[in-house]
Length: 261
Image 1 (tube, rainbow, N blue to C red):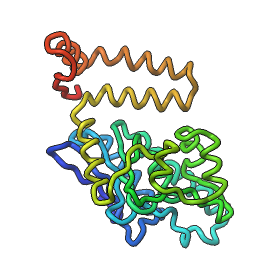
Image 2: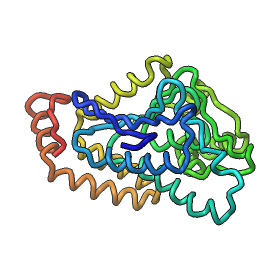
Image 3: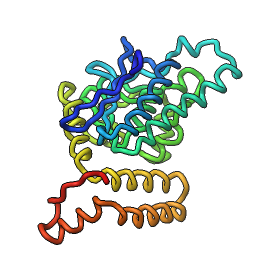
């Protein structure tokens, strides 16, 4: 467990919450980035965790990078650190389980990029998203120029990155950045409920689906189809597939009890 990031596991639902807790705004300094990478590895390996929620608390998700820490850094200083930053966010994006970001308050700059690592984003009604790096004379450096256009399309991503403006929850949902909008007091619980449904599903198949989808988007359709074919075939060696098909034949759809084996 880190100083600013921890993994809390609800044993009943098998939902693990990666919780950012660096008041006042969860600025993503170097230590937070390192702790996020460690939490991602822990969540991926913990067999008690079936799905994950990313949460910054009731007031703010993450207001971006720690500008005070970045200020006056040279090209040489920032070069190595940017690789570490991207590695932390890549670790989160590759958690082999369903991940839902529960966003309250601001998700700006690195905070928006953090939300982009999740499979789904649930936002509070008053949440704000944005990539305001351009206003500092820089660009997103933690995946924003790559994950955002894959999610919302190149034109919308360019407008968001070029302008640096903030987007409310409703506008973010309309453009495909946000999946669900809830009252601020309910967004975390809604994300946990949704994650709980995935946590009770066939974990090996969900992992295979995530890896095939994300790998195909990164590599192109031919490689993606190869990934899909291999993943599809491999699942026939699992107990979950045998249980799922036997249950369907005997009882119809939706009755199987999976064990992620």
